[in-house]
Amino acid sequence: MIDSPTDSRGVAILGSTGSIGCNSLRVIESLTNTPMRVVALAAGTNVERLADQIATHLPEVVSVDTEAAAHDLRAMLFARNVDLPRIVVGEEGLCEVATHPRADCVISATVGAVGFVPTLKALELGKRVALANKETLVMAGELMTAAARKSGAELLPVDSEHNALHQCLRGERREEVRRIILTASGGPFRTKNKADMELATVAEAMRHPTWNMGAKITIDSATLMNKGLEVIEARWLFGFGPEEIDILVHPESVVHSMIEMVDGSVIAQLGVTDMRHAIQYALTYPERHTCQLPPLDLTTVSGLHFEAPDHERFPCIRLAYRALREGGTLPAAMNAANEEAVAAFLNERISLTEIPQVIESVMNDHSNQPAKDIQTILAADHESRLAARATIERIPIRVHQ
Ligand SMILES: NC(=O)c1ccc[n+]([C@@H]2O[C@H](COP(=O)([O-])OP(=O)(O)OC[C@H]3O[C@@H](n4cnc5c(N)ncnc54)[C@H](OP(=O)(O)O)[C@@H]3O)[C@@H](O)[C@H]2O)c1
Image 1 (cartoon, protein in one colour):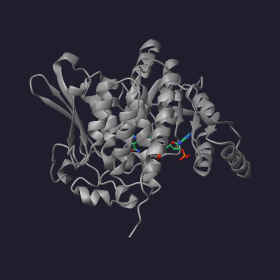
Image 2: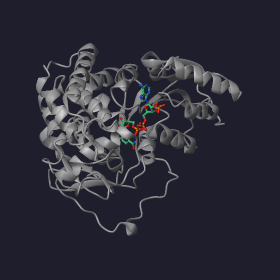
Image 3: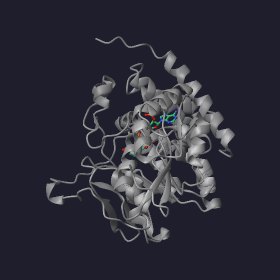
C-alpha cells in the first residue's frame, strides 16, 4: 500500500489500466520527493488490473465502462477483502473521476473520443491536465485551449514528441522560433512498398519498431496517422500554423522532436524510448526530479538518421494537414473515421491501405461547420462514425489465401 501524506497532490487517471495509465502509476509510486495520492481512477473493462490498482492505491472513486464491469469489480474487491471505493459507470463516471474535488492533476489517458468531455471538464475546473489522449485535442483543440485559458488550467503534453517540444520551447520567444519538427519512427512499414502494405496483417502492423503501446496508437503509427494527429495536437498546444509544423522520419526514435530558430539553430530533446520520462515531466513541471530510469547512453546509439516522410505511401499525413487547414468540425470527422477504420482493420474487416480511403471518403462528404460547442463536435463525431461504418460496409470482404 502507498503512504498517503496529507500534503500530497491528488491525481486522477482516466485510462488507468492502459499502457500510459499503468506507466503513470509506476511514476507516481517512484516519486518520493513529490508525494502524490491517487484519488480517482477510470478504466474500461479490465477489472482485474483495476482491482490490483485499487488494492495498492486506495482511490476514493473509480469508474468503469459498463454496469457488468462494475458488478465484476465489486465481487472481485469483496473476495479480496479490499474496501470498496465509490464505483461509477460510463461517461458520467469518467467525468466524476476527471472532476474529483481532491484531484489537482488529471492524467488524460483513455484512447479516442471517449476522453473528450471528461478532459474538457477537468480543464474547465482549472485542473492541471497531463494529456496523452491526443484525439481529444484533435477533435476540439479550440474549445479545450479556450477552456484552459479561461480557467487558468495547465495543459501539459505527455505525448513524447510534444513533451520534447515543450522542453525545447522553454524560455524561448515564440517569434524567434521558425518551425517545429515532429520526429516519427516511420512505423513497421517504413521500408516496405505499397504492395506489401496492402497485404499487411494485423500482427505485422502491431510490430512497432521502437515503442510498446496500446493497439489503436500502434496502428496509427503504422499508417502515420499518429503523426498527422500529432501535427494537429502541436498546433493547439503551441500555437504554430500548419506551415510551421514539419515531420521528419527518424527510425531510431532517440530525438523525440526539435525546434528550428530564426537564426537556423536547431534545438532537440533526446531520450530513451520510455514514456515514464514524459509522464514524470508533466507531473512535476516546472520542477525536474531524479528519475529511476537509466539515462540515454549515446555510446550505444549507432547512428541518427533522418528522412522526409513518404506522403504517397502514407496518405494519412496529407489528410491530417487538410483537416488542420480547413478546421471547423473536419478534424473531429477525420478522427472519428480513423477510429472506426482502425477498429475495422484490427477486426480484419479492411486492409491497412483501406484505412486512409475510408477517412478520405468521410472527410469529402462531411459538411464542415465551426466547432463552436460540445454538441456540434459530438454530432460531427457521431455522424462521421456512421458514415465510416457505411463506407466500410461497402468494401468487399477480402478472401484470405
Ligand atoms: N502508449 C503510449 O506509449 C502512448 C504514447 C503517446 C500517446 N499515447 C496516447 O495515449 C492514449 C492512451 O494510449 P494507450 O496506448 O495507453 O492505450 P491503451 O493501452 O489501449 O489504454 C486505453 C485505456 O483507455 C481505457 N478505455 C478504453 N475505452 C474506454 C471507455 N469506453 N471508457 C473508459 N475507459 C476506456 C482502457 O480501459 P480497459 O483496458 O480497462 O478497457 C485503458 O485503460 C491514446 O490517446 C494514445 O494515442 C499513448
